[in-house]
Amino acid sequence: MVKSFGIWKIIDNVGIIAKIAPGNQYKIEKHTLWDTTERDGILLYDWPVHLSDNAWMTEKKLLDLCDALAFAQKHFASARSILSNKASWEQTRLYSLHNIKSR
View (cartoon, rainbow, N blue to C red):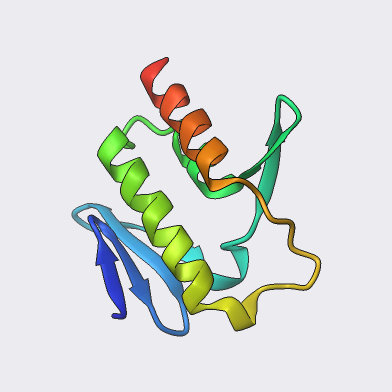
């Protein structure tokens, strides 16, 4: 393990792994760290937006995920595709937090 952010752990040669519940873990492959999605004309990082729809995702877990993803993007920079888009971390956090609060 390289570093931890709450339940999110950066693992060399893998990406990010989180234990959601006993016997249930979530894995984010390193080559998907830069995946993006567009919402309301704004380019956002996909993982926080996607996972903010899950009932188990709290504000704390979401903010830890954003920190873990930002760190992992730097750590695994060599795995980034030349075609990857750069999204806004600030807008990603705001959108995803709003999504959690409005559930």
